[in-house]
Amino acid sequence: MLDNLGASLKDAVKKLAGKTVIDRAAVDELVRDLQRALLQADVNVKLVMQLSQAIKQRALDEEPPKGMGAREHVLRIVYQELVRLMGTPGAVTLGPQTILMAGLQGSGKTTTTAKLARFFQRKGLRVGVICADTFRPGAYDQLKTLCDRISVPCFGDPKEPDALKIVREGLPRFRKLYEVIIIDTQGRHALEEHLIEEIININEISHADHRWLVIDAALGQQASEQARRFHEAIGIDGVLVTKMDGTARGGGALSAVAETQSGIVFIGSGETIEDLERFNPDGFISRLLGMGDLKALVERAEEAV
Amino acid sequence: VRDREVLLEEKDIEEPLFELEMVLLENDVALPVTDEIIARMRKDLVGRHKKIGTSVDELVASTLRSALCGVLGDGLDLLDYVRENERPVRILFTGVNGTGKTTTVAKVGHYLQKNGFSVVIGAGDTFRAGAIEQIRTHADRLGIKVIQHQAGADPSAVLFDTVQYARAHNIDVVLADTAGRFHNRANLMNQLEKIRRVMKPDLVVYVDEAVAGNDAVIRADEFNRAVGTDAVVLTKADMDPKGGAAISIAHTVGKPILFLGTGQGYDDILPFSPRVVVDELLGDEA
Ligand SMILES: Nc1nc2c(ncn2[C@@H]2O[C@H](COP(=O)(O)OP(=O)(O)OP(=O)(O)O)[C@@H](O)[C@H]2O)c(=O)[nH]1
Ligand SMILES: Nc1nc2c(ncn2[C@@H]2O[C@H](COP(=O)(O)OP(=O)(O)OP(=O)(O)O)[C@@H](O)[C@H]2O)c(=O)[nH]1
Ligand SMILES: [Mg+2]
Ligand SMILES: [Mg+2]
Image 1 (cartoon, rainbow over the protein chains, first blue to last red):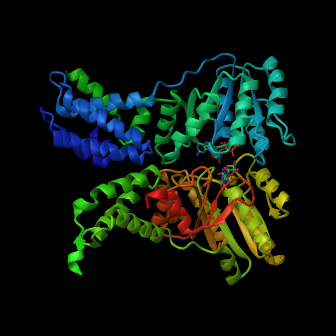
Image 2: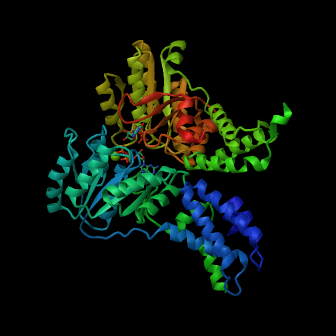
Image 3: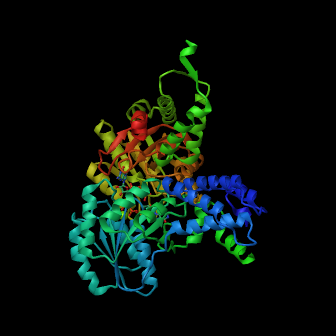
């Protein structure tokens, strides 16, 4: 198991192995390596500092359960604190609903819209998609092509410049016919006031049940600020992390979770429509730390007690 | 003279170095790059003489400023490059998904036209849904000729044809768009390598975004190994003017930065200047 641990974290963990008394220097070293792993995973710098403080304090203050070694004690605390940071996985209901997609330019909204359509379709629901991106050249063609592949209807008009008009026309029509409606929107960022205004308006007229923020796994420290602004504008209630099939570790998504007080709903892991996975906190933690299954390790230690 | 100076010791610079380290990390300079910059600064600073009455913080900050300028280099003037090379100058754009390659191709096409050069675009992304329509719409608006095949066609063939077209029509510059791809997908990287062999670009321009975090280093390195990188464009600098990804990438591949992308308009492209980036990054801190 330990062979899968991230290299330096592994060394630090080894130093704690076999010890029965918690050694301050060894804890310091472990926490330092944990910090480095999380920073490299793009977790918000301030969050990392808070988290490592909390872990250090607990590791030194709390009495390990009888029979649990120092290493297991510290790893258990690391695991618990990371789970807390992860938030609760966003809920998915399998019934009628409208979902509004939001996010930065190029984050993966359109692709994920099609993936979600596929997800709900497989669950036996009637799904319709609305293309409210009237800005990006080829946006309608892109979404329409993806929807055609799974025979999901796509409402939109590449010649119409007003996104609100499309939503106003498409939504009542689609609500009569379909149970799940997903609205794709153009990319925008926190400093584009007129575009933030636009999505506020789309949210108002659509009365969306969910407003999901799409976050690229490679997004760095900006994740906090961007998520804060989107949340303030439309009240984000779930985060979708895309491009997890690359090498990025997705720590920016945790900043978004912290800012929006929501949770991660789905993970995008490829370019095809099928490449969508429900969020799994333990898998995500392994990815963040670049190490094997921390949960299994902790559970085994708990059983041994 | 000596008695009016002090020798800097490790303990004098620890605090200001820590603060600068935080500034770099909070602005997305990747951790290993930050480590190297800080380590080099520590080496440079310890044992240096400092005039009594000047502040350590200032000395540290100005050292960092010049270190960062050194990492970033002087950029590359595309207009000079086109003037000095044999036509058609062939430019291949690469990068991972969604960083802004296609938009950058359109912006660079517009920039070159404004400066008196003729341009043709090759629609080398035959894979992603809507990709051909996207580049076609941009080019139509800008009055630029596009060479395209059908969706699903071999991108090397499209880009080969684009170069042939440019030769036959005395076009100055070929801009080759490609599909976004991840560096850990061997077959897609091989396809890019084939494109490179077939169209023989003068410049391979790697496109990444200012808001990318630590992965910027990994993928810049992998693309550089797989197909080479001659210059870099950093997009979406309007989302995050501080974007330390510039430092991460320049440090990793050691190649000049051509442009910053600063928005979705055709004129939202800024020839690169290291000072501008360093000023944004360090702000009042230095
Ligand atoms: N490998 C991989 N690529 C993805 C994933 N999700 C999206 N992409 C790719 O990322 C790029 C951008 O995706 P889009 O869906 O167009 O992003 P968007 O947010 O709609 O972009 P704008 O509408 O321009 O803001 C495309 O090349 C997609 O194929 C993923 O999970 N994995
Ligand atoms: N704010 C901002 N948006 C940009 C910039 N450059 C590109 N974009 C937007 O980012 C999104 C993705 O850009 P594309 O040019 O399609 O990216 P790409 O790299 O070609 O994407 P794929 O071909 O799918 O890999 C689009 O919505 C662009 O309008 C920029 O400098 N600033
Ligand atoms: Mg889109
Ligand atoms: Mg493209």
